[in-house]
Image (tube, rainbow, N blue to C red; front, side, top):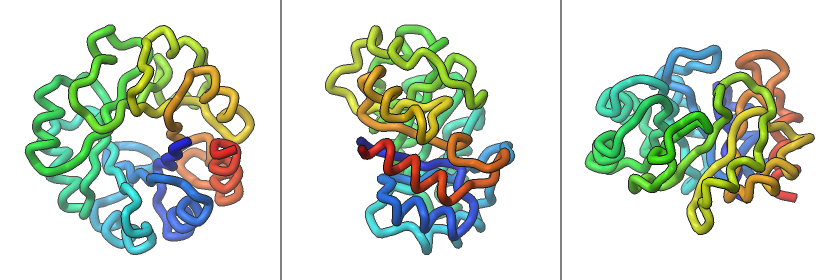
Length: 198
């Protein structure tokens, strides 16, 4: 099970995610309680093991702006939320970067087809709520054989069951490993990765 821990902002949280066995880390470069600056990300990259994807997360910014900010932060992976098009995928790839394209369960059927992104992330119909949802409903999308991440309302207590219900290739967590909004809990990070990998 591929595990991405997102919204990291301190050396300890990055180190803990890596030591726990996470496969990728995410840094929020858009308006959020978890927002970090490109300069902060460059400093945090010192704690990311060689070869581990470090992802810049963006919401509604134009793809070209996201690419520019990610480059300033020293990142080669971009995660785009919001209303996107195949042209956005090309923009990221033309910049030599890799893409996680995030969609919600409320998206149109076309949004779930492959546009050439490296990974698809599937979130609850209302993303960012931190609420659990009907994870099994993803199976109706027939994503067999594709690499995709399940997100939304996951924590150490439900991640194994949710991933099994959805048939997920990987999972992405942010609020589910926090003690307060935007504040990561190191023990929860460890527990989440262990539960997901079990």
